Image 1 (cartoon, rainbow, N blue to C red):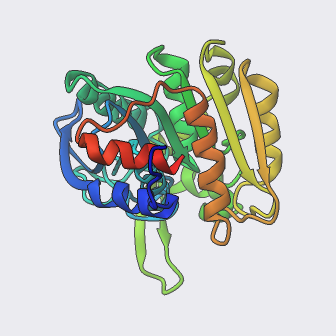
Image 2: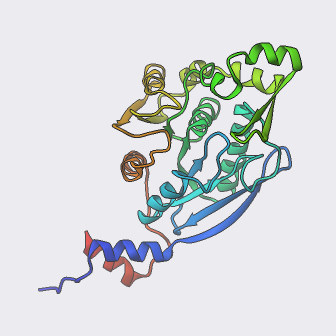
Length: 291
């Protein structure tokens, strides 16, 4: 009788973690700006792309935790900063939804040139809108995860710009947004405000082809983007699943594991995940013995 390995599933996961390499990757967008990202390289042919939210970056939750979760499953993940955010070049602009779609397009083309298969594009908050807008424009991805995206882009503006933002914008042509200490953080121009107000999420959702699987995840305790936005996405996307995480806030502060589990389950169900090419035969046998 063949001896059974004493390796545990935890041993196998530890082996996978040790094989992950964090590689800094720089990709130039169509505006000649360098986009900086971190590739969690496992050696898999497939890769998932993670898109951060409004005034956020690749190094915030849930981007880092999701990339680590995919790495633990042997799937490479790439988290990057949109232009004007984090380590990427460019200036921050309010709105800019389709400009960020263009950034994502540059990332997709980079991995295509590298002969990698993109298993899914995943976005949090504003990044959720970006991945949906991308799927409505390009038919080269078949799994999309929208985490806490905003369906109605007319909402949420007063919270940042004030109730009289339209009047002040008409009067001055711009609005400076200050932090709690009174320091100006960024300027909203009339052009960038119009960009947000004219981005039609409903029309874009209806253009997403039926062969594209979409998962929307929303927290029931989200005070930044209400749960009703998640329900609206479900009404207008043909091939759609909705997953509500009870008690979760906008950042999923206390629900990172549940968030990662839902995302992983959805992506793996639609992927052709291969084992990392860097595994040795002995390690591969050890991994199989854990199952």
